Figure 1 (cartoon, one colour):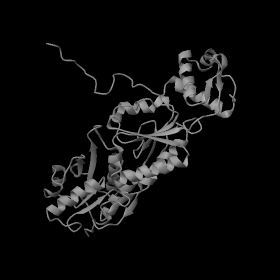
Figure 2 (cartoon, one colour):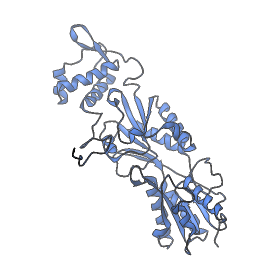
Figure 3 (tube, rainbow, N blue to C red):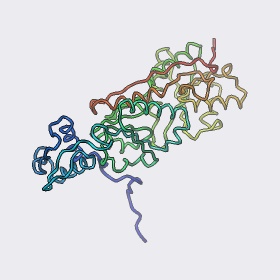
Figure 4 (tube, helix red, strand yellow):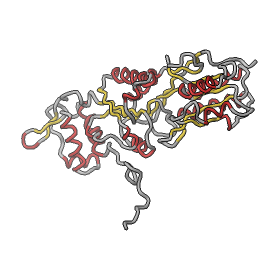
Length: 371
């Protein structure tokens, strides 16, 4: 009987350090592009030999050859007489003067675009990248949760935009790339990347404060747990921080039983939701991390004949012009998040920068006074 393999690696991932598609030859190619753009290598000039370039950059001749092959594909150099390489004018659109912004979605884009949220993000990215007169390449698939897209090293990439959930090991691979990498609608946290996201903590603080001002003292917080990446949603972490800070600033205790974990598979009859309506110390108000969680609470209240807002106040984060028109809470224009993400491609890779988009409070019909 064959022995069962021990310590088997996670499917789709190799052990050890993830490969870096922006390896040494890409660095050489990037430096030579700068020479071409600056005119230090003029049109018609002979490209220095492999040996000369290898000595200049401290790499092998094989690395230099791969870099020159990349520039040849871009139309920046071509073979002349006597096997010499000559500098040419750029040909085609994928050149150093019109390089690619690559959007990598860890999922299927058609699924994202069915929502107003996804449509707003995409609209902002389209506008922002077009404003920079860059070509925009979009790749999307669930496999990108654990894989860097193949053949990125064959393209003149100016910067990468990451949208969705990514395995931490793959995030570390993106950290080491030479170009700017921007997280779209995700806080930067400790990642060495740029990020465009919502001003989550401020918005959650303001929402909680409004509920407290209305006389609510038992306010539940519904947060999002990501099963795929085995973490609390990064935006949720910040929103919970704003919720907790508002309670503390107003002299209210943080009751752990009022912080409720939810996943994407919850329904209005899931224990996480129905528990809000059980027991003597029920909350009088709920702050939901997104409109989907808020709708679960509204549906559960309706099924139990609990009036909203007379019996329970519900507030939640939602995109601008979202489906829950009556929902009170922070509203976010995600088009601005997409624009902010695209703008971060313009700067250098380091130091990492973060752009925050403020939410706007919407006074709907789902919160009421306890006074």
